[in-house]
Every structure is written in structure tokens, then in C-alpha cells.
Length: 432
Ligand SMILES: *Cc1c(COP(=O)(O)O)cnc(C)c1O
Image (cartoon, rainbow, N blue to C red; front, side, top):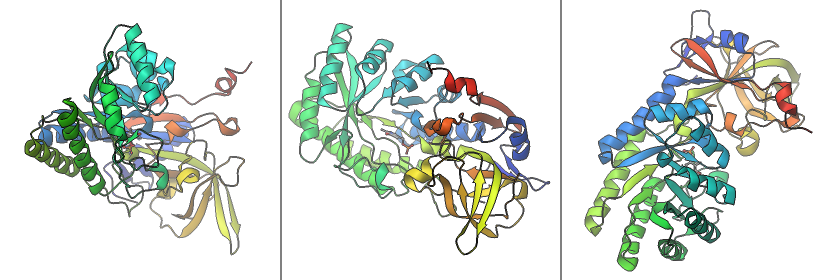
């Protein structure tokens, strides 16, 4: 098991998370169960804020990218920790606003926001709308005009960076649906058009180079290219881009092989690069926005399951089936994402088996992992999958009409439900 401040093995030999015995949690709240450690989330928020203070004089704002894990309590925590948030849909925006999240600290992006979503964002006073296309630019300008407001915007662009990560999560290179292309001048033309819209205020530009990145180079390179663009826009158009949104994508630890760089280090280097370019090229130091999602909540969550069957197929593999699967964690079937797993009730025992962990959905591909090192499993064991705080609950579905699992927040040995388990009645609520 990898080292973490909230993971422990207690005297009974059970896995403990955030001071709570995971077997007791499984018993009290049933499985499958998402468990999040509040202290870890808050510490991550604090560290991001602090590094923005220390490295960049606080001339920026950390936005929690809420698509990683979105529910009312998470928006409350982000708000209490002084972060802004990133939303990508009317639903996320609605949830954030429902707990009184200050609209001016919300950034709304997405490659194809609907008219209704844009109207909602303008009406509620969202601080930053990241405009992704020409269609959206004219639509948003018209909406702002009708409401007689000047809507602040950022322009999404692709700085042409191929971050080394899974190809599904690369978003900074040319062949990608988001934003405009920097290299061929499209981003420049787009910024020119944006600056000319009477009902929009062009605040700056936005990029996001990928996700689960461990290498600082793509971030640095993106920051440099974005600064070059800021200089170019000022020189040619006479427009000062005051805000630079550098996106998210900082890697976390899923397995022991993953070695994340401390975000303070990224922040330090990125700040230095931006300050030096601003100084050398004589442009105003931009206000920086950063959008970490996974790195705020990923390691703060685990998922608990109950083992149902164990099928040993000689010379083939052993299937350990659990009571959840792709319905609560589709990341293995989407990206072959790797996770560290252990049996909570046998946490002290050695992992002598190598198994395939299967879900309960009606899909052969419904797996949570292959070649997983695990203690000898049998029916009734509680399986813990680590680092499931990001892109698990938020990607959950009702496939096979499986009710979505509950989310329990733990802190210093206490636990509370923050998202109730769905019931069968919930499943048919909208059926007519
Ligand atoms: C997904 C996304 C993020 C968050 O990425 P993480 O890898 O979770 O940090 C930030 N910004 C944008 C635009 C995104 O699409």
C-alpha cells in the first residue's frame, strides 16, 4: 500500500481511512461506498492557495475543476477554502450556485455550451466564461446584449502541446475538439474577433494541456507560449490580456510507481517563467487562474466493495467479482486506468494473488483491474480501491439500473453521508 496520511492499518489488521475503520464504514453504510477524507481535500486546497500566495504574490486564483467530483458539499468546501470553481455544464453551475457559491469566482468552460447554459451563466453573473468557438462568441454576445451586460470572457486555445499521458486526455495539441489553434493564427484571429464584440469583455486566454501529467515541461511550455501570445496580441491589437488561465492536469498517485511532483514546485517554476517573460517583454503581469481537479480530490477518496464470487480458471485467471463496477468506476474500461487495491479485512496479510477484479454489470468488459496484486479473496471480504476520489462518483451511471452509491465523508474518525445512496424509487422517478 502506498504511503498516505489518511491510510493506516489498525490493530485489528483492518484498513483505516481518515481515522475510520473501513469495515465499520462498509457495515454502517453498505457497499459499494465512496469514502472521502475531508482533511486531505482541505489540505490540498490550502496547499494550492498557499503556493499561489508564496510564488505569485496571490495575483491569481485557484479554481477547483469540479467535474472531478461534484456535489454540494464539495462546492461548500471549495468555497470555505477560498477557491473558485470551474464548471462545465448547467448542472455543475446549478449545484455550485445552490450552496451560494460566489458567481464571480466561477469559470464556465466547455466546447459546446447550450444557449440555455449560456443564458444561465450570464444571468447569474458567472465571472469567467471560456469561449470555445465562433458560434459561441456571437451567441454569447447576443445574450449579453439582450441583458444589457458586459460579460467577461476568456478564449480557449490549444498551445500545441502533446503532453505524455493517455491519448484520450490530451487536450493541448491541435487534433482536439477544444478551442482554437495557436500555430496557424486561428487563436489570434479569434481573439481579435472576441475583442471587437460590444457586449463582451475579453479578459484573457485559457489553455489546458492534458490530465494526469507528472512532467512539468508541458506546463512550462504552455505558459511560455501563452505569454508569447499575450505579447503578440498587445503589440498587434493593442489589447492587454490580463488573465491567463493555465488549466489543470497535475498527476496524482494511483499506484506506487506514480511519482507526482509537489504542486508548490510547479507553481514556483511557472510563476518564475511568467514573471520573467512579463518583465523582458514589458507586459503587465497577468492574473493567473489554475484549474486542478484530480489532484485536489483524487487521493482523498477510496471505494469499498463486497466480494461476491471468486472464480479460479486454471491457467487462465482468477475473477474476483464485487458488488459495483463500471457503474461506479468506468475508468478501467475507458482508459485501462490502474489502481491499487487491497482487502480491508486482510490488510495485514501479504498480497499473494494476482487477480482480475470484475464488476457486476452485464458486460464482459466490466472490470476494475487486471493483474491486480491482492490478498487471497473470498466471498464477504471488503475490497478497497484506492485513489478513487476523482472521476469516479462524477462519472457514475445507472447502467443496468444500478442505484448510484453513497458518498461518505470522513474526518478524524467521524463519518457522515454527503451524498445519499440512490434508491429504486429514485431510479424510476422520471419514468412515465
Ligand atoms: C478536466 C479539466 C481540468 C481538470 O483537470 P485535472 O486533470 O482533473 O486537474 C481543468 N481544466 C479544464 C479545462 C479541464 O477540462
